[in-house]
Length: 286
Ligand SMILES: N[C@@H](CCC(=O)N[C@@H](CS)C(=O)NCC(=O)O)C(=O)O
Image (cartoon, rainbow, N blue to C red):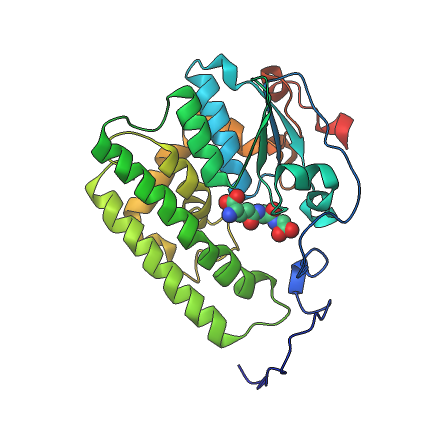
């Protein structure tokens, strides 16, 4: 980095300093405006967007439905984070952290709010008794990799992705720092997936659903257009695992939900019924 920055005694908010997401980044929490969230007909109400964090949950819900858990029927409402929907009062009441994904379970007498993608995956896995092994060693290994994702992906998204793709300029120091860490993380996954079919062992679990949208997306070249830069072809076991998960029909459906960018055929902006995948609603919603 050529510019030398001397931090002032007290940090102050420069509204223009945040790169691509400067318009939504703030140093304060809480709502910016009053807006109730819509509520549909199903027990589960999801408020989200098809980013890697959002896709984890729609994959889980589609996998649950595919496995016959009819109680997992859900309405998926679009939260446009670039337009600040996450700062509406209704959304903040479901997730005080103002980030997608956020879930309301209205199946019981008292609605339950669930935020943080890892917490949502765990909640659904417990509720339906699915995609979380019951024997302790495999359950522990599932939770190891689930929490590994929660701690690791911010270096990929907030670190590497931010400085490589979104920051107002390309600076060598942070790009080097985070490219090194992301390659180390890919090697961690590659070594694990050389030993086992899925992250927790023989079974496909919520750990795979959490890690796949970030690191599977990276080796497939979807995240930050950085496949060549990071030489992702080196991570053959991660590629094998990523392709195996991509071939699951529930994953294909989960990737489409709340998607508003890319190929129109891959978008289902809101999902209120299983039949929505056939009769795409995006034109009506546009
Ligand atoms: N640790 C959170 C991260 C969620 C997150 O960062 N969501 C992003 C989209 S991928 C978001 O809503 N950003 C909006 C904002 O920061 O205002 C989780 O796993 O749920």
